[in-house]
Image (cartoon, rainbow, N blue to C red; front, side, top):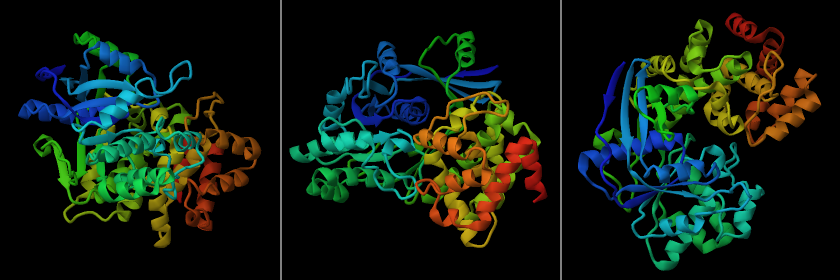
Length: 489
């Protein structure tokens, strides 16, 4: 084992950043970049207050007990490991619902932190569903119970948009300039979508507040990239063998990328020397990553998980699935991208396949499969629509959509049940109960979900037929038969 220990985290600093969404990705990505910056410069002004909004309180309290310090293990492969201690998180808060159903244990502390003059930047990793936007239209889901509660009691917010609106309202009332809001979630135009959610919610509270946010608050876009699987008992055991007994540790790949639109009126860390790419327009990089990396991940998840394939590494070890990803990335995804001159998409595809084959990561396919209704419009369907409008075929995503429909039934090829973790899971269950014995009716019903599938794509008879044909191949012949049919087609 080639093990590298990086210097321990320096002493505590001040809080200049509030982060919403204290999870593994935040701790293994943004916090690592900030730790590099602090160690390089000695600048302690950009410490982080990190809040969980809906997950368990356990991690919040565990990090408090550990003095807010934890380890990140970065694997280039199973034999090459870098261990670093992270100390840039200065505070952890919980604003979700506890086991007794009570909301917002630390909510007032969080809002006060957001309203403090020292807070100049707010970052988010709350997943696509945490913005409460229709995935297809981008409109605020005003009828969602969580958003409805924020509309009814705006000073006691439960959602990320609601927390931002209340905090910005407090800053406006006291004459403080607004903080910058930086989404770090995998969504196209994530800054613009965050702005839409916040402004739409603010307008329902106070038209003047909505106008002020729209005019004064910066919402830069960003693209984030690092594979950070959920921790397993095997991961903790492997670290313990190296002398790291840390219940808050995170494991990820060695590769990391962060591309950020440079729009920070209240300032930001000078973190370009630490690997952050500051650009004028993130959109091409964002779309490239969503369609090629995340789109490939989703293909593996929905095709592989019901067949008993557990991880990305296991999936790409199969020649047929590896060939499928190569075909999808270069024949379907890459042609829909408008990249800066000199971008080598063939090399990018090859690098992704090499990363997927990292044998040190147990990136579970069921983890990737979560929240498909929120992810697939960006990862597959907008690109597929562009291809169809150009008169080109999209057989790989047609197969992927068929696999997703099969996945939402919640049973694998052996008939064993698994949970379908998606905001629309109950609707999926109803559709399968009603149409499960009629493939054509089932596929038609899923394609008619216009909050997931763009109506123009659903109305494309050739594409709909391709999805139905792929669904029948999957359910009647299994993965091997469906992949063979794709090759023949």
